[in-house]
Amino acid sequence: MTGFTVTRHIAARPSIVFEALTTAEGIAAWWGPDDLPVVKAEIDPRVGGGYRVHFRTLDGGDHEAFGEILEFEPPTRLVMTYAYAFGGEPIEDGRVSRIEIDLKPVGAGVELIFTQTGLANSASVASHTNGWTGALDKLVRNVGGGA
Image 1 (cartoon, rainbow, N blue to C red):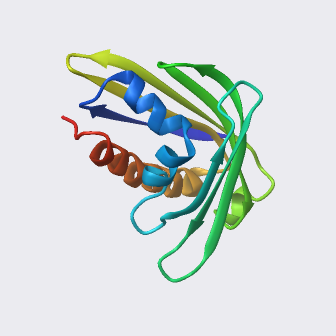
Image 2: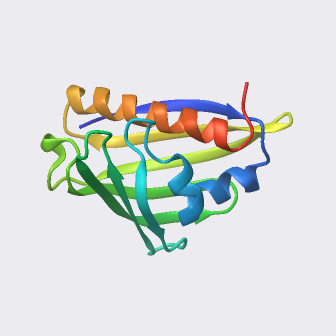
C-alpha cells in the first residue's frame, strides 16, 4: 500500500480553511481539479458522519467518492476514509484509503498538509496526487490565495 503528501500555504485563517473542508458549499467549490468539477456534495461534519461527492468530467463521465469522518478537530485536523461509489480509478474499486488533513497556523495564514494512504499501487498514487494537487490549487484560489 502506498500514499503521498501535498502541502499548500493558504492566506486565510485556519477556521476559514476548515469550513471550506467541512461544508457542502465549501467542498463543492474546490474538491476536484478544474477538469473534474463537483456536481453535488454532501457532508455530515462530525466523527462518525459521512460525506459523498459527485464529480463529472468535462466529457460527461460520472464519478462519486464517499467516506466516513474518523477524526474531526476544528480548526486543525480532519481524517476520513475515501472510496469510490462508482467511477474513479478502476484499481481502487472496492478499496478504502485514508485521508488526513492537518492545518497549522503560519504567519498570516495556514499550512495545509494533505496525506492520502492505502492506495493500491504507484499508478494510483500518481493519479490521485495529480487530482488532489489540482483540487488543492483550487482551494488556495478560493479561500484567499497563498504563498
